[in-house]
Length: 134
Image (cartoon, rainbow, N blue to C red):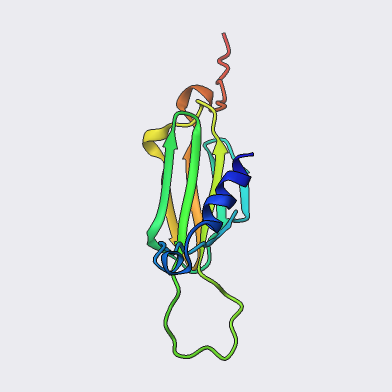
């Protein structure tokens, strides 16, 4: 029912009023492809975010939710004769357990590849216990 109500209200607008409505640009949202690796000391996320500049990349960790957001801006290179690349936003969310040391997370972006290092907390890292002869 709500959909019909909205449609009816939109149809009721006069053509002159419709031209004055705010125009909203809809951007494509892409979930970047991510590879996840684990070793004894960290989890490593490697995400493809081509065309994203570091100033348009945001990484948030709140509670147990890690979010990667990036914005690829259109570059003016002249009149396009053909274009397959569009402006887009990247968005991906992961659940992260409490075994990650949030204060030591680091990230680097190089040639469209984001490497996000999630160090394991000391308490969950495997360690070798030395055995002494007695």
